[in-house]
Image (cartoon, rainbow, N blue to C red; front, side):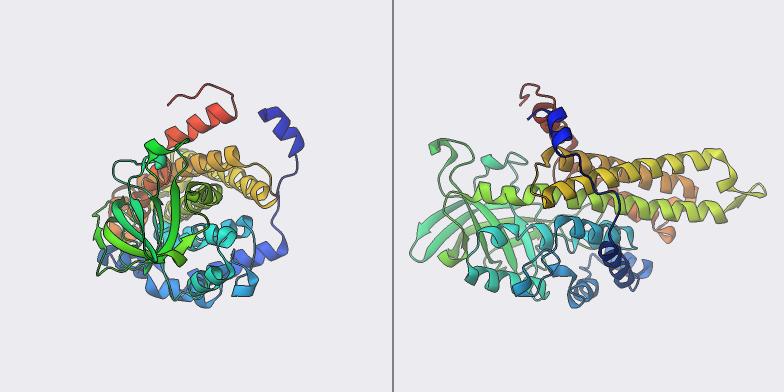
Length: 400
Protein backbone atom coordinates (compact mmCIF):
# COMPACT_ATOMS: atom_id res chain seq x y z
CA UNK A 1 0.00 0.00 0.00
CA UNK A 2 1.39 3.43 -0.88
CA UNK A 3 2.57 5.54 2.04
CA UNK A 4 0.07 8.34 1.28
CA UNK A 5 -2.85 5.91 1.42
CA UNK A 6 -1.65 4.48 4.71
CA UNK A 7 -1.41 7.94 6.23
CA UNK A 8 -4.94 8.75 5.11
CA UNK A 9 -6.39 5.51 6.47
CA UNK A 10 -4.46 5.49 9.76
CA UNK A 11 -4.90 9.13 10.68
CA UNK A 12 -5.57 8.45 14.37
CA UNK A 13 -2.51 8.79 16.58
CA UNK A 14 -1.75 8.62 20.27
CA UNK A 15 -0.98 12.20 21.32
CA UNK A 16 -1.44 12.06 25.09
CA UNK A 17 -1.04 9.35 27.68
CA UNK A 18 -4.16 8.25 29.56
CA UNK A 19 -4.36 8.42 33.35
CA UNK A 20 -3.75 4.67 33.54
CA UNK A 21 -0.70 4.96 31.32
CA UNK A 22 0.65 7.84 33.41
CA UNK A 23 0.16 5.66 36.50
CA UNK A 24 2.23 2.90 34.88
CA UNK A 25 5.04 5.37 34.26
CA UNK A 26 4.92 6.72 37.81
CA UNK A 27 4.86 3.31 39.48
CA UNK A 28 7.69 1.93 37.35
CA UNK A 29 9.72 5.08 38.03
CA UNK A 30 9.18 4.61 41.76
CA UNK A 31 10.50 1.04 41.66
CA UNK A 32 13.52 2.08 39.61
CA UNK A 33 14.39 4.85 42.06
CA UNK A 34 15.32 2.21 44.62
CA UNK A 35 18.31 1.31 42.44
CA UNK A 36 20.67 4.24 42.08
CA UNK A 37 24.00 5.08 40.52
CA UNK A 38 26.10 3.13 43.01
CA UNK A 39 24.10 -0.05 42.41
CA UNK A 40 24.37 0.14 38.63
CA UNK A 41 28.02 1.17 38.66
CA UNK A 42 28.80 -1.89 40.78
CA UNK A 43 26.83 -4.18 38.45
CA UNK A 44 28.65 -2.74 35.44
CA UNK A 45 32.11 -2.92 37.04
CA UNK A 46 31.60 -6.39 38.50
CA UNK A 47 29.84 -7.64 35.36
CA UNK A 48 27.04 -8.88 37.59
CA UNK A 49 23.42 -9.40 36.53
CA UNK A 50 21.08 -7.05 38.48
CA UNK A 51 19.27 -9.82 40.33
CA UNK A 52 17.76 -7.52 42.96
CA UNK A 53 16.34 -5.17 40.34
CA UNK A 54 14.94 -8.08 38.31
CA UNK A 55 13.35 -9.48 41.48
CA UNK A 56 11.78 -6.13 42.41
CA UNK A 57 10.26 -5.71 38.96
CA UNK A 58 8.87 -9.25 39.10
CA UNK A 59 7.45 -8.73 42.60
CA UNK A 60 5.68 -5.59 41.42
CA UNK A 61 4.10 -7.46 38.51
CA UNK A 62 5.94 -5.70 35.68
CA UNK A 63 7.41 -8.79 34.02
CA UNK A 64 3.93 -9.85 32.95
CA UNK A 65 2.70 -6.55 31.55
CA UNK A 66 2.01 -8.03 28.10
CA UNK A 67 1.19 -11.56 29.27
CA UNK A 68 -2.26 -13.21 29.50
CA UNK A 69 -4.32 -12.38 32.59
CA UNK A 70 -5.07 -16.03 33.31
CA UNK A 71 -1.35 -16.51 33.96
CA UNK A 72 -1.07 -13.52 36.26
CA UNK A 73 -0.13 -11.01 33.57
CA UNK A 74 -1.73 -7.66 32.86
CA UNK A 75 -2.63 -8.43 29.22
CA UNK A 76 -1.73 -4.87 28.20
CA UNK A 77 -0.39 -3.76 24.85
CA UNK A 78 2.97 -2.85 23.39
CA UNK A 79 2.07 0.80 24.09
CA UNK A 80 2.01 0.16 27.84
CA UNK A 81 5.14 -1.98 27.61
CA UNK A 82 6.87 0.91 25.82
CA UNK A 83 5.82 3.33 28.55
CA UNK A 84 7.22 0.96 31.14
CA UNK A 85 10.53 0.40 29.35
CA UNK A 86 11.01 4.11 28.70
CA UNK A 87 10.95 4.70 32.45
CA UNK A 88 13.30 1.78 33.08
CA UNK A 89 15.96 2.99 30.65
CA UNK A 90 15.60 6.63 31.75
CA UNK A 91 16.47 5.55 35.29
CA UNK A 92 19.97 5.18 36.71
CA UNK A 93 20.16 1.71 35.18
CA UNK A 94 20.05 2.91 31.59
CA UNK A 95 20.09 0.25 28.91
CA UNK A 96 21.44 -2.38 31.30
CA UNK A 97 18.23 -2.11 33.31
CA UNK A 98 16.13 -2.40 30.16
CA UNK A 99 18.13 -5.36 28.88
CA UNK A 100 17.55 -7.24 32.11
CA UNK A 101 13.81 -7.22 31.38
CA UNK A 102 12.79 -6.74 27.79
CA UNK A 103 13.05 -10.33 26.53
CA UNK A 104 10.12 -11.01 28.87
CA UNK A 105 8.05 -8.53 26.88
CA UNK A 106 8.69 -9.48 23.25
CA UNK A 107 10.60 -12.78 23.19
CA UNK A 108 7.85 -15.11 24.42
CA UNK A 109 5.18 -13.62 22.14
CA UNK A 110 5.50 -16.65 19.87
CA UNK A 111 4.51 -18.83 22.82
CA UNK A 112 1.56 -16.54 23.61
CA UNK A 113 0.29 -16.74 20.01
CA UNK A 114 1.24 -20.29 18.97
CA UNK A 115 1.81 -22.24 22.18
CA UNK A 116 -0.64 -24.76 23.55
CA UNK A 117 -2.47 -24.05 26.81
CA UNK A 118 -0.11 -26.45 28.55
CA UNK A 119 2.95 -24.71 27.09
CA UNK A 120 1.71 -21.25 28.04
CA UNK A 121 1.22 -22.29 31.65
CA UNK A 122 4.50 -24.20 31.85
CA UNK A 123 6.64 -21.67 30.00
CA UNK A 124 5.17 -18.25 30.72
CA UNK A 125 4.09 -18.42 34.36
CA UNK A 126 7.67 -18.85 35.69
CA UNK A 127 8.82 -15.92 33.50
CA UNK A 128 6.06 -13.67 34.84
CA UNK A 129 6.91 -14.61 38.41
CA UNK A 130 10.63 -14.07 37.83
CA UNK A 131 11.54 -17.69 38.63
CA UNK A 132 12.84 -18.29 35.10
CA UNK A 133 15.09 -16.14 32.97
CA UNK A 134 15.16 -16.66 29.21
CA UNK A 135 17.65 -15.82 26.49
CA UNK A 136 17.21 -15.52 22.73
CA UNK A 137 19.05 -18.02 20.51
CA UNK A 138 18.60 -16.70 16.98
CA UNK A 139 21.70 -14.86 15.69
CA UNK A 140 24.60 -16.96 14.41
CA UNK A 141 28.26 -16.07 13.70
CA UNK A 142 28.07 -16.66 9.94
CA UNK A 143 24.47 -15.63 9.30
CA UNK A 144 24.31 -12.36 11.25
CA UNK A 145 21.09 -10.53 10.34
CA UNK A 146 20.46 -12.94 7.45
CA UNK A 147 18.33 -15.16 9.64
CA UNK A 148 17.31 -17.49 6.82
CA UNK A 149 20.96 -18.57 6.56
CA UNK A 150 21.24 -19.99 10.08
CA UNK A 151 22.77 -23.46 10.23
CA UNK A 152 21.85 -24.67 13.72
CA UNK A 153 20.04 -27.91 12.91
CA UNK A 154 17.44 -29.88 14.84
CA UNK A 155 17.38 -33.55 13.75
CA UNK A 156 14.28 -35.58 14.60
CA UNK A 157 14.98 -38.37 17.12
CA UNK A 158 12.81 -40.47 19.43
CA UNK A 159 10.86 -38.15 21.72
CA UNK A 160 12.19 -34.94 20.27
CA UNK A 161 15.14 -33.43 18.45
CA UNK A 162 18.92 -33.48 18.59
CA UNK A 163 20.23 -29.93 18.08
CA UNK A 164 23.69 -28.93 16.91
CA UNK A 165 24.87 -25.42 16.06
CA UNK A 166 26.30 -22.12 17.20
CA UNK A 167 24.60 -18.93 18.38
CA UNK A 168 26.16 -15.56 19.13
CA UNK A 169 25.22 -12.46 21.09
CA UNK A 170 23.01 -14.53 23.36
CA UNK A 171 22.12 -11.92 25.97
CA UNK A 172 21.81 -13.03 29.62
CA UNK A 173 22.91 -16.56 28.73
CA UNK A 174 25.06 -16.73 31.86
CA UNK A 175 22.03 -16.38 34.14
CA UNK A 176 19.25 -17.75 31.92
CA UNK A 177 17.85 -21.22 32.50
CA UNK A 178 15.65 -21.14 29.36
CA UNK A 179 16.34 -20.40 25.70
CA UNK A 180 14.07 -19.46 22.79
CA UNK A 181 15.92 -21.32 20.07
CA UNK A 182 15.47 -20.96 16.31
CA UNK A 183 16.78 -23.88 14.25
CA UNK A 184 16.60 -25.40 10.82
CA UNK A 185 14.77 -28.69 10.44
CA UNK A 186 15.14 -28.64 6.66
CA UNK A 187 18.29 -27.35 4.96
CA UNK A 188 17.80 -24.00 3.23
CA UNK A 189 18.77 -25.40 -0.16
CA UNK A 190 15.96 -27.96 0.05
CA UNK A 191 13.24 -25.40 0.77
CA UNK A 192 10.99 -23.69 -1.76
CA UNK A 193 11.46 -20.39 0.09
CA UNK A 194 14.41 -19.38 2.31
CA UNK A 195 12.03 -18.73 5.20
CA UNK A 196 10.69 -22.30 5.12
CA UNK A 197 12.12 -25.19 7.12
CA UNK A 198 12.84 -23.31 10.35
CA UNK A 199 11.53 -24.54 13.70
CA UNK A 200 11.23 -22.73 17.01
CA UNK A 201 11.76 -24.21 20.47
CA UNK A 202 11.50 -22.88 24.01
CA UNK A 203 13.50 -25.21 26.17
CA UNK A 204 15.90 -25.65 29.08
CA UNK A 205 19.37 -24.15 28.78
CA UNK A 206 21.38 -26.86 30.54
CA UNK A 207 24.86 -25.43 30.86
CA UNK A 208 26.29 -28.81 31.78
CA UNK A 209 25.60 -29.75 28.14
CA UNK A 210 25.62 -26.41 26.33
CA UNK A 211 28.68 -24.15 26.48
CA UNK A 212 27.79 -20.49 27.02
CA UNK A 213 30.97 -18.42 26.69
CA UNK A 214 30.87 -14.78 27.77
CA UNK A 215 31.97 -12.18 25.19
CA UNK A 216 34.03 -9.27 26.61
CA UNK A 217 32.45 -6.06 25.35
CA UNK A 218 32.44 -2.27 25.56
CA UNK A 219 29.33 -1.62 27.62
CA UNK A 220 26.09 -2.91 29.11
CA UNK A 221 28.27 -5.19 31.21
CA UNK A 222 25.60 -5.85 33.83
CA UNK A 223 23.86 -8.01 31.22
CA UNK A 224 26.15 -10.59 29.64
CA UNK A 225 26.44 -11.40 25.93
CA UNK A 226 27.64 -14.81 24.83
CA UNK A 227 28.74 -17.24 22.20
CA UNK A 228 26.68 -20.42 22.61
CA UNK A 229 27.93 -23.85 21.46
CA UNK A 230 25.33 -26.61 21.06
CA UNK A 231 26.33 -30.19 20.17
CA UNK A 232 23.85 -33.09 19.99
CA UNK A 233 21.64 -31.41 22.57
CA UNK A 234 18.33 -33.18 23.16
CA UNK A 235 15.21 -31.02 23.08
CA UNK A 236 11.91 -32.79 23.89
CA UNK A 237 9.11 -32.55 21.35
CA UNK A 238 6.83 -30.85 23.86
CA UNK A 239 9.20 -27.85 23.80
CA UNK A 240 8.58 -27.20 20.10
CA UNK A 241 6.43 -24.13 19.49
CA UNK A 242 3.77 -24.63 16.86
CA UNK A 243 4.41 -26.62 13.69
CA UNK A 244 7.72 -27.90 12.48
CA UNK A 245 9.10 -25.72 9.70
CA UNK A 246 7.07 -22.61 10.59
CA UNK A 247 9.48 -21.04 13.09
CA UNK A 248 10.48 -18.06 10.99
CA UNK A 249 6.85 -16.98 10.65
CA UNK A 250 6.45 -17.26 14.42
CA UNK A 251 9.37 -15.01 15.29
CA UNK A 252 7.99 -12.36 12.96
CA UNK A 253 5.33 -11.73 15.61
CA UNK A 254 8.10 -10.42 17.86
CA UNK A 255 10.00 -8.22 15.41
CA UNK A 256 7.90 -5.06 15.38
CA UNK A 257 7.40 -5.10 19.18
CA UNK A 258 11.16 -5.58 19.50
CA UNK A 259 11.86 -2.56 17.29
CA UNK A 260 9.36 -0.48 19.27
CA UNK A 261 10.74 -1.45 22.67
CA UNK A 262 14.40 -1.08 21.74
CA UNK A 263 13.62 2.31 20.18
CA UNK A 264 11.80 3.57 23.28
CA UNK A 265 14.56 2.21 25.53
CA UNK A 266 17.03 4.24 23.47
CA UNK A 267 14.94 7.36 23.99
CA UNK A 268 14.84 6.72 27.74
CA UNK A 269 18.60 6.25 27.82
CA UNK A 270 19.11 9.51 25.94
CA UNK A 271 16.71 11.40 28.18
CA UNK A 272 18.50 10.11 31.27
CA UNK A 273 21.82 11.33 29.89
CA UNK A 274 20.30 14.68 28.89
CA UNK A 275 18.94 15.17 32.42
CA UNK A 276 22.39 14.56 33.88
CA UNK A 277 24.01 16.97 31.40
CA UNK A 278 21.46 19.69 32.11
CA UNK A 279 21.92 19.33 35.87
CA UNK A 280 25.69 19.56 35.53
CA UNK A 281 25.37 22.65 33.30
CA UNK A 282 23.19 24.34 35.94
CA UNK A 283 25.68 23.65 38.73
CA UNK A 284 29.14 23.89 37.12
CA UNK A 285 30.84 27.31 37.23
CA UNK A 286 33.76 28.25 34.99
CA UNK A 287 35.19 31.78 34.67
CA UNK A 288 32.68 32.99 37.23
CA UNK A 289 29.48 31.85 35.48
CA UNK A 290 27.43 28.70 35.18
CA UNK A 291 28.28 26.88 31.96
CA UNK A 292 24.58 26.46 31.29
CA UNK A 293 24.37 30.22 30.64
CA UNK A 294 26.41 29.74 27.49
CA UNK A 295 24.50 29.13 24.27
CA UNK A 296 27.36 26.88 23.20
CA UNK A 297 26.16 24.54 25.97
CA UNK A 298 22.43 25.31 25.76
CA UNK A 299 21.82 24.87 22.07
CA UNK A 300 23.27 21.36 21.61
CA UNK A 301 21.33 20.14 24.66
CA UNK A 302 18.14 21.74 23.36
CA UNK A 303 18.73 20.09 20.00
CA UNK A 304 19.11 16.73 21.74
CA UNK A 305 15.72 17.29 23.39
CA UNK A 306 14.02 17.96 20.05
CA UNK A 307 15.34 14.75 18.47
CA UNK A 308 14.52 12.63 21.51
CA UNK A 309 11.01 14.07 21.66
CA UNK A 310 10.31 13.43 17.98
CA UNK A 311 11.70 9.89 18.23
CA UNK A 312 9.49 9.23 21.25
CA UNK A 313 6.30 10.12 19.42
CA UNK A 314 7.24 8.20 16.28
CA UNK A 315 7.72 5.11 18.45
CA UNK A 316 4.49 5.69 20.35
CA UNK A 317 2.67 5.95 17.03
CA UNK A 318 4.17 2.62 15.99
CA UNK A 319 3.02 1.09 19.29
CA UNK A 320 -0.48 2.51 18.79
CA UNK A 321 -0.68 1.05 15.28
CA UNK A 322 0.58 -2.35 16.46
CA UNK A 323 -1.97 -2.54 19.28
CA UNK A 324 -4.72 -1.50 16.87
CA UNK A 325 -3.81 -4.37 14.55
CA UNK A 326 -2.67 -1.99 11.79
CA UNK A 327 0.51 -2.17 9.69
CA UNK A 328 3.41 -0.60 11.59
CA UNK A 329 6.61 -1.98 10.07
CA UNK A 330 7.79 1.35 8.65
CA UNK A 331 6.96 3.25 11.82
CA UNK A 332 8.55 0.63 14.11
CA UNK A 333 11.74 0.58 12.06
CA UNK A 334 11.88 4.36 11.74
CA UNK A 335 11.30 4.76 15.46
CA UNK A 336 14.14 2.40 16.27
CA UNK A 337 16.40 4.29 13.84
CA UNK A 338 15.51 7.70 15.29
CA UNK A 339 15.71 6.51 18.89
CA UNK A 340 19.13 4.96 18.43
CA UNK A 341 20.55 8.05 16.73
CA UNK A 342 19.00 10.46 19.25
CA UNK A 343 20.24 8.41 22.21
CA UNK A 344 23.79 8.20 20.89
CA UNK A 345 23.90 11.94 20.21
CA UNK A 346 22.46 12.81 23.64
CA UNK A 347 24.85 10.51 25.48
CA UNK A 348 27.79 11.86 23.51
CA UNK A 349 26.72 15.43 24.29
CA UNK A 350 26.33 14.54 27.97
CA UNK A 351 29.97 13.46 28.10
CA UNK A 352 31.08 16.62 26.27
CA UNK A 353 29.02 18.85 28.58
CA UNK A 354 30.80 17.37 31.58
CA UNK A 355 34.15 18.05 29.97
CA UNK A 356 36.97 16.12 31.62
CA UNK A 357 34.62 14.79 34.29
CA UNK A 358 32.55 13.17 31.55
CA UNK A 359 35.43 10.76 31.09
CA UNK A 360 35.30 9.85 34.77
CA UNK A 361 33.05 7.10 36.12
CA UNK A 362 31.91 9.42 38.94
CA UNK A 363 29.26 11.20 36.87
CA UNK A 364 27.97 8.05 35.17
CA UNK A 365 27.62 9.54 31.67
CA UNK A 366 30.56 7.53 30.32
CA UNK A 367 28.62 4.37 31.25
CA UNK A 368 25.54 5.60 29.40
CA UNK A 369 27.70 6.64 26.42
CA UNK A 370 29.20 3.15 26.18
CA UNK A 371 25.72 1.65 26.15
CA UNK A 372 24.35 4.06 23.56
CA UNK A 373 26.43 2.85 20.61
CA UNK A 374 24.83 -0.59 20.89
CA UNK A 375 21.44 0.90 20.07
CA UNK A 376 22.69 1.98 16.65
CA UNK A 377 23.90 -1.54 15.88
CA UNK A 378 21.43 -3.99 17.41
CA UNK A 379 19.08 -5.73 17.03
CA UNK A 380 19.00 -4.42 13.47
CA UNK A 381 21.45 -2.09 11.76
CA UNK A 382 20.62 1.37 10.51
CA UNK A 383 21.42 0.25 6.98
CA UNK A 384 18.83 -2.54 6.97
CA UNK A 385 16.24 -0.20 8.44
CA UNK A 386 16.84 2.30 5.65
CA UNK A 387 16.68 -0.48 3.06
CA UNK A 388 13.34 -1.61 4.52
CA UNK A 389 11.89 1.89 4.31
CA UNK A 390 13.29 2.45 0.81
CA UNK A 391 11.66 -0.74 -0.45
CA UNK A 392 8.41 -0.86 1.54
CA UNK A 393 7.56 2.85 1.76
CA UNK A 394 9.30 4.47 -1.20
CA UNK A 395 8.75 1.51 -3.54
CA UNK A 396 12.40 1.35 -4.57
CA UNK A 397 13.96 -1.88 -5.85
CA UNK A 398 15.49 -4.35 -3.42
CA UNK A 399 19.20 -3.61 -2.97
CA UNK A 400 20.51 -6.83 -1.44
